[in-house]
Amino acid sequence: MNINFTYLPGDGIGPEVGEAAIEVLNAVAVKFGHTLEPEHHLVGGAAIDAGEKPLPDASFESCQRTGAILLGAVGGPKWDHLKGEDRPELGSLLPLRKRLNLYANIRPCKPYPALIERAPLKRERLEGVDFVVMRELTGGIYFGQKGRDTRGAFDECLYSEAEIRRIAIKGFDLAQTRRKKVTSVDKSNVLETSRLWRETVIDVAKDYPEVELEHLLVDAMTMHMLTRAQDFDVILTENMFGDILTDEASVLCGSMGVIPSASLSDGKTGMFEPIHGSAPDIAGQGKANPLAMILSAAWMLRLSFGLKVEADAIETAVANALEQNQTTGDLGGKLNTSAVGEWIAANV
View 1 (cartoon, rainbow, N blue to C red):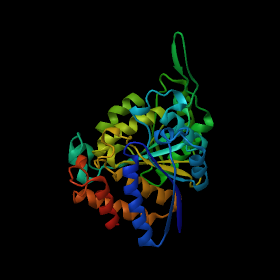
View 2: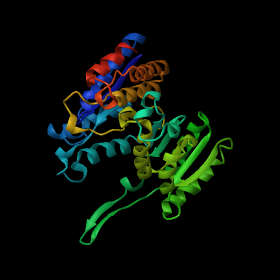
View 3: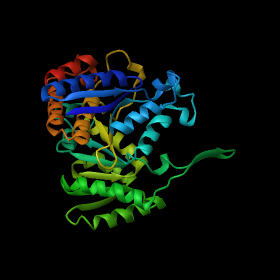
View 4: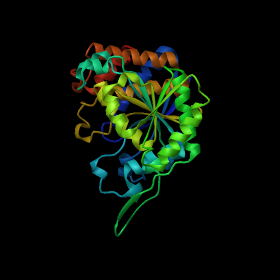
C-alpha cells in the first residue's frame, strides 16, 4: 500500500517528535511492505515565519487531497502579540477542523501499567480505567461570533440539532464496539445549547437500546472523572467541555506525553496529533517525549488506511518501551527524543 499523508511538523517540539514518528512509520513500511509518501508542509508559527499565513494554501490543498494529516503542535509565546486569525492556532487549527469537517475528536484514556505510579492519584483509582472522550470539534463557543465593544467582549455559543445528532451517532456507534455505555456531559441546568444537546442525545439513544445512557453536568463530571473513572466507557460532550475534560483525563494516564488524538470527518478523512502543546521551552534540546506523536501515527494507520496490524505493532512497541524504561527524562528514562524513536522503530 502507498501510505500517502500530509505531514505538518508545526512549531516548538513539533518537528522533533514528528521526525521520531516518521522514523517509526518508515520502519513499519519496510517491515510490512508498504511505501511511505509523506507530503511535508508548513503550518502555524513556522508558516508565519516563512512569510505565509498560518494555514498556507499549499498546506491545506495537501490535507484536502490526502485526507490523512499527521500534525505536530502549533503556536507559542513568540506569536502571542498577533491578533485573531493571524495567530498560529486560530489561523490554522480551527480552519483545518472546519474546512475539512473534522467534527469528531477522539481521545483515549487507558493508563499504561508502567505509568500508574507516576500519576498523582492512588493506584486503585487508576487500575481498570479505559474510556474514550468523543468531543464535538467544529461547533460551540470556539466557532461562534466573537467581538469587543467599549463595554466588554463576547463569544457566542451556537449548536444546531444536526451538529449534535451526528456526533452523538459517532459516540453511540463507538460504544457499541466497546462496553456499551455512553456518558453525555452538558450544562443543561443553565445553558440552552446544553438543553438541546441533552434532548438530541436522548433521541439518538432510542436507536441504540443495548447502549446504556448516563447524563452528567460538566462540573460534576470533573469530580467523577477522578473518583470513579472506571465507570466510564464513551464520554460524549461538546467542544469547550471536551477540551477541558480531556486535559483533566491526561492526569489519569500519568503524562500528557503518551496520549494521541484523532479528529475525524465522515469516511476516512482524519487529522492525528498528540494532545500536548508545542513546549517551546524545551524545543531543540532533545528532551521532548515523542510517544504521543508516535501513537498518533499508529491511529492514522488504523483509521485512515485500515492498517490495524501495523498500528498494533507500533502500540505494542510503545508499551514495551515504557515497560523497559526506554523513554525520555519526563518519564524517568535517559534517552533523548530521537533515540526513543529509534528504539521503537527497531522494535516494531
